Image (tube, rainbow, N blue to C red; front, side, top):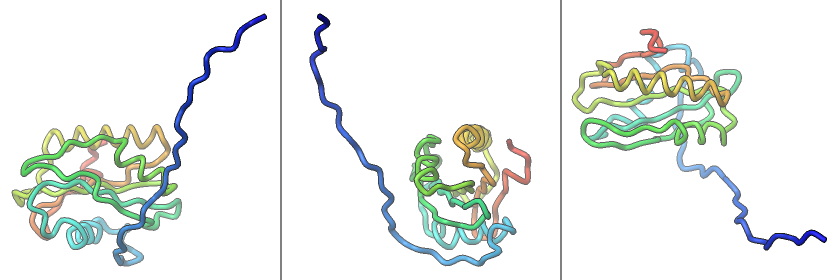
Length: 153
């Protein structure tokens, strides 16, 4: 007669979203990258002394449903892992996301690392079904670059 293996236990987990704050936005925000850049600047990056990465999430009708500051880095960079951003998007049941990060130097010119991160995030998003809509690099107020417009992925 076969014997049963010794039993062990495994923890059970529950994931949940925590609502922290709200930000207002114009309904046509996502139709104009200029407005998206201004929104990110106003809500997140206006007084950031170091580089930060944020993501705004959209539903299937391309309406904003939430956002997060995903990473806070050093003066000249931050390490980005797709799982940190995409896990929040999946919990929100997002269909798409817009990345944005600042360059504290004030120069929004994308670095080679920015372009590589954008490609990696687009690929990871495609795998899990959350589409990268754009990635904005913000410098000083009013100065920004859309990696989507530049065809970075």
